Image (cartoon, rainbow, N blue to C red; front, top):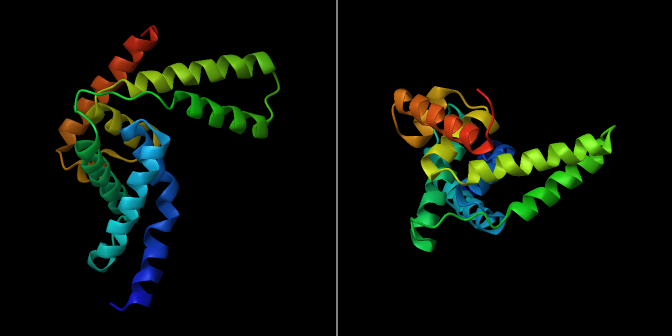
Length: 178
């Protein structure tokens, strides 16, 4: 495959999924700047490996590369015991900007919703990485169990178990009645 074909294929396969890639990387790393580094590395890997992409689910292929890049980045840059939650203010600023553009009818309701979202984000970010990524891939990215199993390289039963445990932990942290 020549260089022009690779770039065209990269543009068709990878570029449409950059928002999802960034979202996954942000959730796995817990930090905006680190997520940008991960996505950049993932894009380089995808460009180098685009010739080996045999078709199929483009989004799952891209997110698998992002996940692997994120875990490589975490192993290289963080102690496994460290849980970063330092980007919650940036998440909150993004949500405020999103809310401003959507024009909520009730400012009090919008404020309560933002506070609830910040609590939810904090609860998700405090989950162990394997549970957090499974929850994000399913409930944020909307992937099905089979796609998540392929991305994370675990059986579907493990995906289901991790998702149930992640949801249960989030509910416990938020103090939501079952």
